[in-house]
Image (cartoon, rainbow, N blue to C red; front, side, top):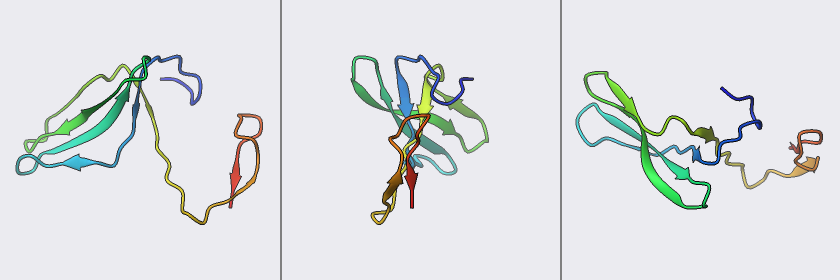
Length: 89
């Protein structure tokens, strides 16, 4: 595991809220895989099957979260660096 912001991974997953159910009781969670070249692919990241078993793909890559801010959010201070992070209202 890597401490946040210290990964040297050249490819990474972007988190996603999207999932689908292709069969009764099974869920497929998706993400976008971003490669070092900048190419972006949409893949199933994690699958939970109706019998409780699961599978995953490309687990060697780090996951970067996606944060959605309200339209009323405003930057109060900071420059976005580790020593001066953004402070929002």
